Amino acid sequence: MTDAQIIVSAITVLAVLAGAVFNNVRIGDVNIGLNRRIDDLRGVLRAELLKETAGIRNLIERNQDALLTELARISR
Image (cartoon, rainbow, N blue to C red; front, side):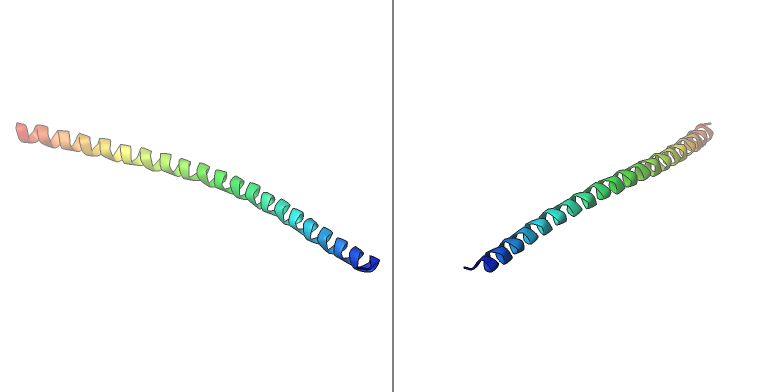
């Protein structure tokens, strides 16, 4: 193998390794960004769920009051 072939092979190997490292860094960046977006979505969903739960509880309390009033009227 000539010196030129060794140099070309070494450059090729270094380029492949550099590409692998660069790609791995980009995957890590995507992972961090995705985790941040998931955390934001989790907060939004939690707030929406709390809002809907409060609405359902209010509806249950109103229905319970209406039911108790109607049962009291029927029992008279």
